[in-house]
Every structure is written in structure tokens, then in C-alpha cells.
Length: 214
Image (cartoon, rainbow, N blue to C red; front, side, top):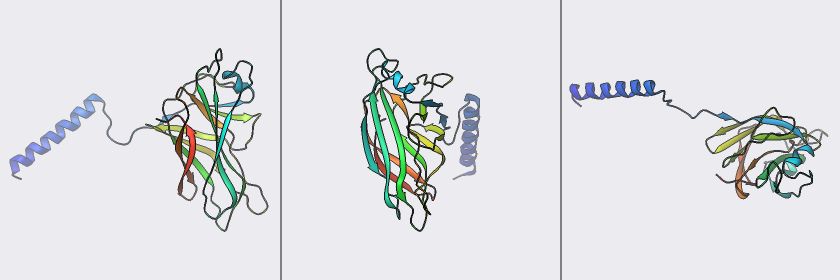
């Protein structure tokens, strides 16, 4: 490349950088979009989907294939449909629970720290106990579980649900732990998707789940 060509290339690069700055454009990884989490209670949260607060749910369970454990670690997917007249009419409620209460650790203890789902749009609702419309809820009262959510961040299609503490298999006579039910509402019907379960040792496991596809 001649000296003149190099100068022209350098000038184009400077002009492109200046234009990007002038337009307020950002170069680099997409910024995470935090989803508002509401800690709520059952059966109060049921009333969003049916004014009688009585709901019918569909459950599926998939094994989380953690190497070295005995027993079972599972991801539970639960869905329910909002009925006419309810605040969440025509929406589907999606709930998930990571359950290691029936698993016992092997020589190396591996715990679940995060769950990631590729999802379509979520619907904001005013969940009981919240301070405004939010995307994600956690049933901390009136349900099963001991571990809540620390954060829920959307990165384009993916939402990363990070647990407040690791969910671990039992060890040394202690029983394993389980998350609370956590979830969201969406207009799309459930489909079989792949959840990505991340362990504390950096391993990521693919596990079937039911959720609104992107």
C-alpha cells in the first residue's frame, strides 16, 4: 500500500470514529437489560391468572445431568393459563424450579448457580408485594424452596437468572437444596426449549424446559 493510500485509510477510520461518537453509537457488547424481580406469595399470585385464585397447572420435569452425583437433580417447568376476566387473561404463566433435594454429591460437589433461557417478549404485571409492573416473580411465601433470585438480566433473546446462593446436592448428611418457584408471564404459548444450567465449576448443561420461544 502506498503512503497516500495509508493516509486515506487512516483518515476514513478517524472520520468513522468521530461520526460514531457524534451519533452516540456504542461499539462493543450489548448492555444487559435488568428485569424487575418481585418477591411474591402464593396463593395471592394465582389471583392474577384466575379471579377465584384457583388455578390448574401443567408440570414437566427434566433431569439435570450433573456428573458424579447420586440420586436426581431436576428442572421443573410449570405452566398455567390466564382465564377471562383475570388481570393476566390470555397470558401464560411460566414457573421454574431447580431441585437438588434428591441428589447427593460425589467426591466433588457441583452446585447450580445460574439458569439461562432464550425467550420471546415477557409481559409486565403488577405482582402482589411489588411496587409496580415487573417482568419476573419469585414465590417466596406459600410455596416450595429456599433459594431466590439475585438477578435476572436480558441479553437480546437470552435471560440469565442468577440464584441468590448456589443450589447444591446433599453432602455429609445434609439434604440438598431447591430454588423457589420463579417465573414470568408471556403471550406466546409454551414450546419445548433448551435451558442452559450453569454450575459453579463453569460447566454448562443443556436441559429441556417449556417456555415461550423467541
